View: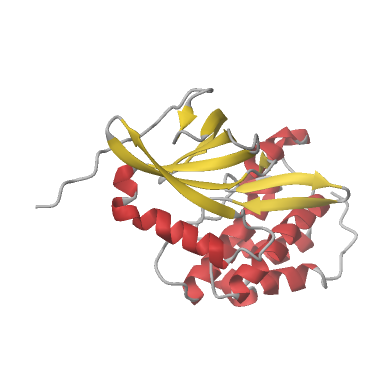
Length: 247
């Protein structure tokens, strides 16, 4: 009978802890269903990296790690994707634990970025610029017939750069083999982020037609039909006629 993996719901590594004998924990970056992410410093080089540490029960026989690393490697030429470096295995309370080491990306979670804005929301023109940046970054992912699988404002890192935005996606999720439904779901959730960024349900009625033409009232079928991939959404945002809706 196979032994069940040890259940670990949180690591809570403190700053200064040595990881795998090679990295010093510099800080906690976030947590998800599969594990926790830390900012670490590589002792040998002094270079800061990110380490995603998988909960053993979410990574049986390293399946979750292999799926994640394989997807990052396949999408390594997509600028919006964080670059995978290598993996490490160490023991935590006697249990083997896998960590994925990747580049460290500076930025702010989209959720926090929006909350900092006046009124806790973005103005329509700025929101469309932001969604255009994300759609442009996701376009090559969909072109490769891949998908993210968990698009929301806590899985997007954003940094202002001039009049635009630098975007990185984190925490790709596995919903099975890539297909049209997975790709369409990415776009539906991307449109939902626009909807929430400009104020959500409370503000939707007062939004200009340009916002409503993209959001489609969050009708999933209409969004999927209008924007089958991120590339279709990107193309639309570059070509619509902006009306003088003063909001």
